[in-house]
Image (cartoon, rainbow, N blue to C red; front, top):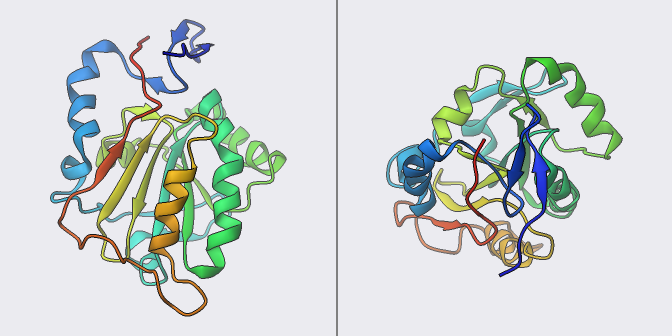
Length: 213
């Protein structure tokens, strides 16, 4: 088993893990519930609705966005190395599948000291998809996010069809394959062609590891 790199938490302490930031060991029980599936984040795999403003002041409503197509909701932070490593992949999906209906949203979990840094940080990395800051932690609680990055793929029925926790380079092919089945091709085929809403979702934790701070 390949050992992940060592990083440092915002407070300065070391973190040993496999490209994921985690909460303290006391949160492990809750994390295992989330890892088994997103049922706890809305019941029967349903995505909790939310409304939030992005960095440019535009209102993002999940309910309204789902009328356009599926939504990929990514929880990340500027201080989280694996989060930052995943940004180019997310941007490529935004550019490739955005015209076909996919909406990628980045939810920054940065603390108050970093609020002003998020916009220039994203711009410096060429991120064009909308970014919002979860200033009060409400969305993290709503979706029970306990590791970063965590991405939720939500289909047009509002069902969470995949949860990806952590990130390792080269492991995005399977996730992208699922994306292609959820957005229509030029003929309009392909959207929501998998299991119907309420059938549950699969949590992808291949890149996860244990750790704490």
